[in-house]
Length: 137
Ligand code: THU
Image 1 (cartoon, rainbow, N blue to C red):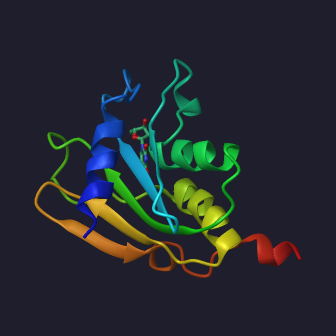
Image 2 (image 1 turned 180 degrees about the horizontal axis):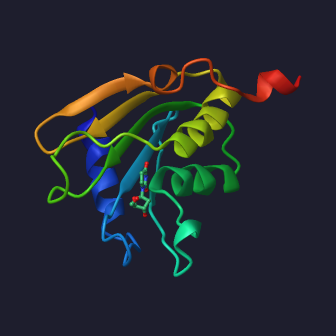
Image 3 (image 1 turned 90 degrees about the horizontal axis):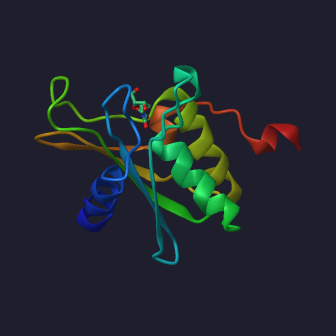
């Protein structure tokens, strides 16, 4: 369990722009050098253009030049929606996370945070047989 990473994700969710779904999500990425990059979901009046928290976090990191070293990810959702089960990254975000992970050859641990428990899974478990940059070599 990485309580600092989970706390960072929860804090990031406070900046969520989700007036349409009212479903704030926070994501936090931890890198090999100990640095943490966070993201939150950003929605749009054109609903289908919503950006997920994980994708925003990866975009922030990559825009700052990060290319690998992804060791862990925490994802949090609201505690007053659904059945309280751990939130897991959507399919698109799994693929986006995989790109950054593949660049550094890591298989990050994903902390999927629920109301009462945290599910820990490897990205490769969430996205087995992933398509990645190596396919284009
Ligand atoms: N959302 C995320 O930010 N990450 C996910 O992995 C799942 C969904 C956001 C998108 C949208 O703003 C809201 O949650 C409801 O789907």
